[in-house]
Amino acid sequence: MKKIILFFFLLNFAIPALSQQGFEFVNAKSDRVKIPIRLINNLAFIPVQVNGVELLFLLDSGVEETILFGFEDPKKLNLNNVQKITIQGLGDNQGVEGFKSSGNLLTIDKMQSKNHMLYLILDPSFNLSNYVGITVNGIIGSAAFTNHLVEIDYGKKMASFHKLDSKFHVKIQKEFRKIPLSIERSKPYVNATVKINDEEVDVKLLVDSGNSDAVWLFDQFSDKIEVPQKHFEDYLGQGLSGAVEGKRARINQFLIADFQFKSPIVAFPDSTSIKNISMQSNRLGSIGGEILRRFTTVFDYNNGWLFLKKNKYFKNSFYYNKSGIEVWHTGVQLVKQLVVVPDNSFVLHSEDVKSDNTSSKLKYKVELKPIYEIGYIRANSNAEKSGLKVGDVIVSIDGKEAYNLSLQEINALLWSENEIWIEVKVQREGKLINFKFKLIDVL
Image (cartoon, rainbow, N blue to C red; front, side, top):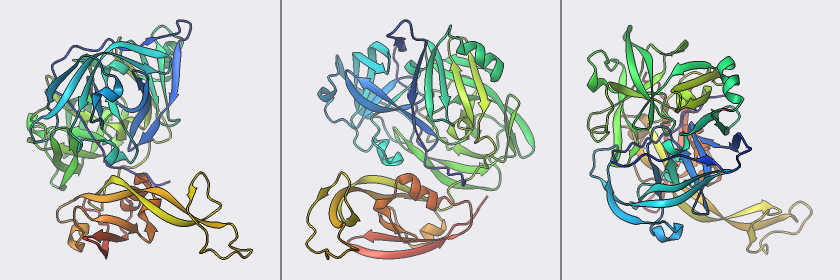
């Protein structure tokens, strides 16, 4: 099965605040809470109730606080003790307006966090939903990882929260590889080794489950970290303070404990994009979801350990976006289609359908379908040279109607590991235009 690396989103804050107390088990007799996760772009999303309202959150070890977005009015969530603030994060723009709210009740299945501090971002352009293709309401950080063992099983798409004194602790000691984990300002860090231009460099990395890339390296902070000569400038993601840009390249090797990865794709964010990060001492980058998804991972913040066990994805190769196109889900549209026996949809009419034996079960229906736009095109890529532009609305890809595809399926077509031709039809200023370009491996 082809491996798909998709658009990633990384968020990091420099907000002075008290650390959350974390979640506690409501039922004292239970020693585990197990919930399914939605795994998209190497990111894990879990349901969380905020003051009784169920929402979908990104489970993000790289963030200290709990963040909400996509809500214009905080009153809809019954938020308590609301105070207006300015929030700063990754990117090269100024901070954005938001709210801070304390005294909230958050629930994850049979666990609760009382008197929880939340940050609400008002900027409508800051919306993770556009980049992953599903409705996402927020990001939950260190509070979800404190007070218990957090297991993320990427292979089975499950997240489990275990009590520290449960039998599971004995199991992982026997079956998993144990790696020292330092917790600084409520965030986890590990030591690893990268091999660049045939030289090995020891690096301290943030373990960031909210970054879907494999590894980020900060070449500005170490003379030993050099961007390989063979690289390209790229858009790395969207941060709280604007676009995150930098370079992408293959390095010789990445090692963590005795796990070795050859020729991974690594991102080198530029100095402008990371200037607003509150950087911990000696940190030289991040390890993200494209590495973490190759394991069942267990975070033990309290005792300072990260446990890793290989899964079925461990030997997958590393690929990147050869198309140079980032597609965003920017809205919905009403689409009328002819279908066989509509299922859970509203039938408008069927007068235009002939009532013979072959078409008697066909009817027209109207459904809300996604709208996809080109949000970014890499400079000098074949997609840009073909004439495609940012803002083009994608109508079809290789003859497949875009509104019938998920964002993941669209990226699967654009991120092929092979050097193939891609045909894209777009709508631009009311006109339908066809383009064709070839995927080229520049690394």
